[in-house]
Length: 166
Image (cartoon, rainbow, N blue to C red):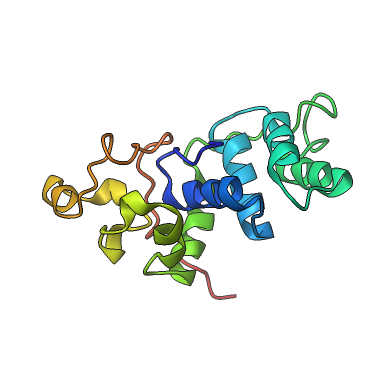
């Protein structure tokens, strides 16, 4: 996660931008934090400590406040340090976040900027490289598991995450 090697392109792009520049936009901070806590089931403090050491605009109250909000500390946890007990085995929240990013940046310019391994991946797979066929992987010079990691959370289906009319 810290090095941007999760196999989930948007998360990896966020982490690589942070590692390279010391900065990450708020949306990326929240999405990457949510991924660490609710999809990888890691202690939120690992992320908070990492951001403390990495962010050039680090502020104690903002950093720990944001991590507390993302990890839902005090909302169902046994104590203030435990955080949420929510379990999302289908990664629904992550899928919705990634689908929003896919709709916002369909050609994956942000991903391509920070993940050179994916530069030749077709637009239709830039957010979901796990759907590439063996032939597409070879043609794009990006074989999952060799040139770019396989997703730590498995293949995520994004197409069914459609905004609902209110």
